[in-house]
Image (cartoon, rainbow, N blue to C red; front, side, top):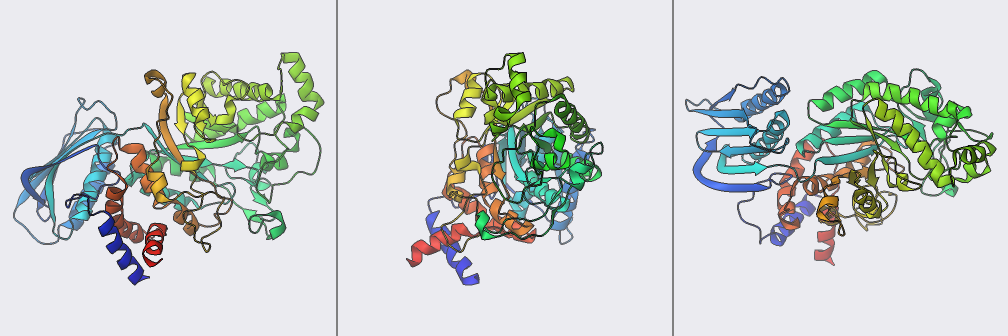
Length: 530
């Protein structure tokens, strides 16, 4: 393995030889970076942090900076330098910052606490790169994100992940300047959030009596009880923790489909009587929420508790893959459609979503859903996540609805990373690191105004076949690092340049006990040895 990594690094050095010799290992790369002639900043000095900022959100950032500066100062030195931090409202982007490094001082300016935080993240990466010499070259950086929403989705319903892992993911996301963690909390295979008014959601819906082995039902079943859930106290603590790193937690409560776990707990939510259970296989199931007053009251109660936990301005309501067969067979649904002049079952789903949206809007929040919520007519204020390609996002943007692009071919990290037959089971498809990096989040066919509604991008890790923390890390890293650069950097410097910066960064992942994929090395090794 060691020989393989050495050979891989040699291969990488050859492949990126066209990249400038002085590469700053910053991920994601700044939008403007200029070297200057102002010498080098010596980390092994007495560094005074000077800031008159009174915003309490800046205090934790400064404390982290102090702790890190102390670790780099290894020997006594009489020389004194300064690290000055200012707020600067001339920086128009609220997440923007400038970082000026000279021989005797560092000046960091941010529009607000968020910009200061991101500027410190950039500085810490430079300090890590030059920690051996303790000398950081003089440089000027002017930086701000390309997209305002930079997201990652973790499916905790199919397989449950401990809260400590979610916090660890928040830590790495913050280093990469990502700002939204979307938690897929409910689905057919498990309900993962405590709802105090409806305890059976976790007592019954939080556990299944077995899990499919392999990819197909015929492959067998574990026949072992599996599950878990987060308490409200755990989630409130997670929200507070993420907020210190300027990451918003977006909760998702699936509706009207992917509802088997909830229906198993409260069968009255269903359109028909049959055996109700938390599903043990993957896929799409016919049993969906019935659009009754009982269901709407139930969902409003659930959402009240969800919104009390999560201050997120958007609440994800799913809306994808909702079969209509049960509604077609339901006498109640057909009568409801006739009474309200609803033309078909797609319009009935739109009615369902619009009722939920109206309630969420009344609480000062907005809904976001997968692109199926376009079918039958889009709810007035809804935001759309476009996953079935880019068409849904384009359509929503043309209707002047905010869009998060998350097309399956570029953003589904449950796809295979390599063609190695020994690789772990994945959902399907092939998504290598290079393809992630080369994704262009701005689709063609939008005029200048419509394009302003493309607010961001999101990578998704669905976990049908991701059974543990280490496998989740393997599927996420380093692809999520490439994705972060797509989301942040307006003019990416190219894949070769990215790889040059990525290789040393992998040692930091290892130091943080993160299990990452080496498929990049595997592909190049195969080319060399073929």
